[in-house]
Image (cartoon, rainbow, N blue to C red; front, top):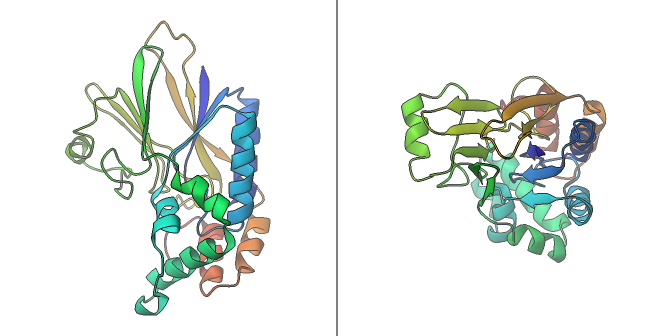
Length: 249
C-alpha cells in the first residue's frame, strides 16, 4: 500500500494537480486529504468540484479543516470589526461563502473531524490540526513534551495532520506524528507544493516509510488568478503565495 497524504489545498488547483500527478508517478493507490480545501486561494469553487470528481474516480478519504468548517458555520461575518491581517482572512471567508454553491458547502459540511483505520499492523489517525482541535498547531521544532500533551488522548500508532502549512515529524516512544505541510499555501518559504508519501510495502509487517515531497507547479499562474479575486486583501494573499510565507506584506 502506498498513499499520498495531502493537506491545506486552499483553492490552489494548479498546485493540487501537480501533486496528484507526482503521486501518480509514485504509484500511490490511496489518497488522504486532511482538510482546508477551498478558502483563501485562487480557485475555491473549481477546486471543490475537482476534488468531488476525484473522489468518484480514486480511493480518496477527506477530513474537514478549520476553514472548511468556517465556510459552512460562520454565517453573517461582520468584516468591519476586523483589522488587518484578520480582515483579509475574513474577506477571503466571505468570498468563499459567496462563490461556493449550496451543494459544494454541503460537501464540506459532511466531511468528518477525523478518520481512523487499521493499515497493515498499525492504527492510523488522520486529522486537520490535532486529535483534539482542528485549529491546534503541530509545528516544526516544538518541545516533545508539548507534542505528547497535544496527542495524549490519541492511541493510534501514526498520526497525520496539517493546518500549520509547515511540514514536520516527531518520533515518540510508541507513536509517530507527521504534519503533511501544505499543497496550496505553503509557509516554508519555498514556493513548492508539499505533501507526504506514506509507503507500507508489506502489510504483514509493521515497517513503513514517510517521505515529504516538494513539487514544482505554475506558481505565477496561481498568483495571477488570486490577485484577480474581487475582495480586499487578495493581492496580499497572492504575495504570500508567491513567497511561500506566513508573513503579511
